[in-house]
Amino acid sequence: MYKLGIDVGGTNTDAVLIDENLHVVADLKRPTSGDIYDGILDAVRAVLEQSGVDRSQIGQAMLGTTQCTNAIVERKHLAPIGILRIGAPATLGILPMVDWAEDIQKIAVGSAVVGGGFEYDGKELAPFDEAAARAFFLEMKEKGVKSIAISCVFSTVRNDHELAAAKLCRQVMGDDVHVSISSEIGSMGLIERENATILNAALWQVAERFTEGFARSLAEEGITNADVYLSQNDGTLMTMEHARRYPILTIACGPTNSIRGASYLSSLKDAIVIDVGGTTTDLGVIQNGFPRESSVAVTIGGVRTNFRMPDVVSIGLGGGSIVRQHPDGSVTVGPDSVGYEITKKALVFGGDVMTATDIAVRLGMVALGDASRVQDIPQDLAEKAMDAIRTLVEDAIDAMKVSSADSDVILVGGGSIILPEKLAGAANVVKPEHFGCANAIGSAISKVSGTFEKLINYDELPREQALAQAKDEAVEIAVAAGAVRDTVEIIEVEDVPLAYYPGNTNRVKIKAAGDLRA
Image (tube, rainbow, N blue to C red; front, side, top):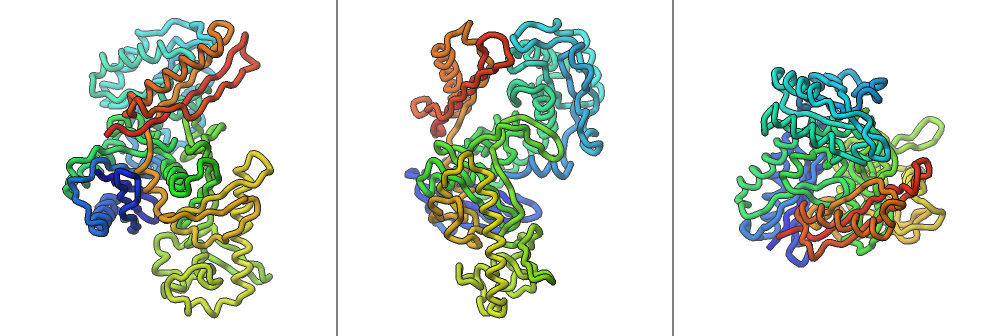
C-alpha cells in the first residue's frame, strides 16, 4: 500500500509516493499551472510513471493547497454570508467586520448582534434572544444566503448559545446551510475569533471545489482505492468532510508540510526549518516533531484573526530572487523574483536576469544549467551577493529563536541550493535527501490531531484531574478526526495561569496526534 502526497505551491507542484514503511519511492516537481488541477494531474502522472507503482495499490492521497489563502488575498470565489453575533447589549460598541477593507466587506449580505453571551467565568450576560436570531435567519434565507457565521462572547468558555443558534439556523434555513461557529475555530478574543469564523464561512465554495476537484483528478488517473485527505496548518491531516467544514484550517499548510517533512527526512524533532522556494523563504520551528504555533494574532489578507496558525517568518528570498549591483558598489538580492519563470530568465538557463541561483552556480555551490554563462560575473560581486543572502537568512534565524543558544537548522525546498553550508546561529546545518520535495513528503506522512482548549478554575477542579480530563478530550477529538486510537499520544500541553481572572483560573490547551486510519 502506498501514500501519494501532493503540495501545490505558487511556483511548483510537488508529488511524492511513499511505501508502507514510509520510504520515499519517487518524488518530483512540476510547474504549477494556471489551472492547478492540470498541474496536479501532470505531477501525479509523472510520479506514477517514475515509480511504476500500480494505481490500485495507492491507499491514501494527501493534498496541501494554497487555494483558501489565495481566495482571501485575491478576494475571489468567496461566498456571500450572514453574520450573527450573540453578545447584545455588551458588544454593540464594536460591530462585526469593523476593521475590514471595503472590498472584502462585501461578502456580508447582512449581520446582526442579538442578546446573549457569557462572562469570562461562564456566567450568562443575557439570555439568548431566539426571536431576534430567528428573524435574522429568515431574512438571510429570503436573500438566498447559504452560509452563516455565528460568534458569541466567551464562547470558548461556554458555547451553549452558539450551539442553540446553530440548531435554530438549520431549522429555519434547512440542513444544507453551512454553519460556522466560532468556538470550533478560534481562540480567546471575540473580534479576532469572529473574523476567523467569517472567513471560514465565506470559503465553503472554495473548499467544495478543491476537495471535489482533487478527488475527480485522482479518479481520472485511475486512483480509485485511495482515501483522500487535506493538509491542515498544524502539520496534521483532516478528512474531506472536515476540510469542507473548516476550510480556513488549510491556510498556511504549505510551510507546516515543509516543517513536518524536514523533521521526518532529518530525524530531528527540534530544529529551525528553512524552506526556500522560487520567490520566498519560510522559516518555522519544529518542536517535538510538530510546528510551533504562533502565540499572537495573525493577519490574513488584511483580516486580523486568532485561530490556530504556525509560527512562520517569510522573507523575500528565493532561487529566483533578482540580484542587482548598485552604483555605489553595493549588491542586493530580492525581494522581487523571476518566480516560476526561472528556467527561462535565469542566466544559467539562457536568460538575461541575474538571480540567486546564478550566484550559487558561479561560486561552485551547485552544478545547474550552463555554468559557462555565469563565469563573467565578477568574483567580488558574487561574494557580496552571497553575503547579502547569508545576512537575510541569519537575521531570520535570530528572529525565530527563543534563546541565544545555537539551534540545529534544516534546509529544504528546491531553492535551498542558494544557501551556504555554514550559518551564524546554527549549531548544525542539515540538508537531507529529497530536500526539494519536503512539503509533499510532509503531507504524505502527516498524522491526525485533536486539540482541546478551555479556561479551567483549579479551585473548582484540581489541576491533575483537570489535565487528565483535558487529555482524554484531546484524544477523543483526534480519534473523531480519523486517528487510530492505540497510536494517539499527547504531543503538547499548555497550562497558563491567568492572573487577571478571579480564583485560580488557567488556560489549558492539550494537543494529541495519532496515525491515520487505513
